[in-house]
Length: 367
Ligand code: PMP
View 1 (cartoon, protein in one colour):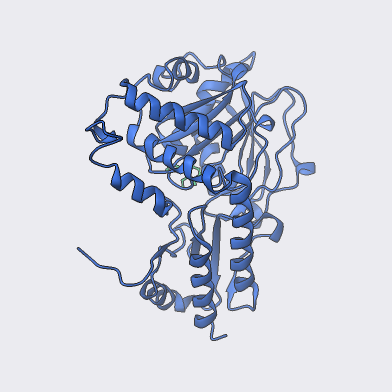
View 2 (cartoon, helix red, strand yellow):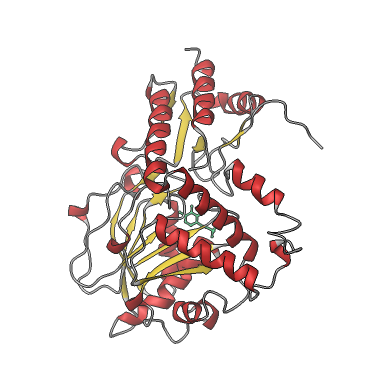
């Protein structure tokens, strides 16, 4: 077994760092969960032990995000990309005539992928796009060309690759639900769930292991599926089966539940937000100190979770990454589609990790 002699800080965009306390608890409970004689992995999803784990996870998430009573929480599979198909298949039926028209705001790689997938099922209107500016901002709401009576509006409130984060909840005229892909910043800041019709998030960033996808959906949006929507992806069917229409990702739900309980103990989402603001400030200040590094995103839309940056002299990239790795600062290479570097600083990244990265940034820049 490899022994690591210094602390390691993992800046991966996802699957990503999880709270050490959670991993320790999972390790302690691995072979025998609460005297059941079983690992959570070995339990029937319909047995009383797992049902208690599932119910507590749902309750804790509801409390953490203050999810109103008229919203359902679904534990699904298929990831964020799965929801790109599942959302139109479940909501396009709201339109009196097919194909439905759906509005999108294009702010980076993930909203672009959502647009591409939705085109199979609906008529896509790109209401606003920052593509021409290299995805460095959220287009101001005053410039969005929304469709009156659209089936819904889709936004990605934190673009994981481009490092662009909404600092507001979209407001829409009339009865047009807002669908938000919050995969990479759910639970990192306070949100008003009632401003959204649907929120979805892959778990593998701020919640737990890959394989679990959360969907929070308003009651009245559960009956708008297209006839071609596969049964196993039909939100109403999933809701009526308590997310156990098929075998749910039980171990991922268990770990997510431990993360939710841990967040509650630390002070909930408001405390996470406070810490995330502090961490992001520290890191962006180091990147902005001179022109050795550059983050291209407009300051008001810079993500608190995913911080892409470039070295002025890109020929130093390999040297930068090797030096970082030697100091235990892992997975800083940027996404292959945009190059450069990226530091993901999710809830579970301690400020000590960000400070270690800042120290290295300063050292490498010769400050
Ligand atoms: N949306 C966002 C914002 C993401 O960051 C990701 C994954 N990086 C996805 C969707 C796709 O998620 P998955 O790989 O779970 O399908």
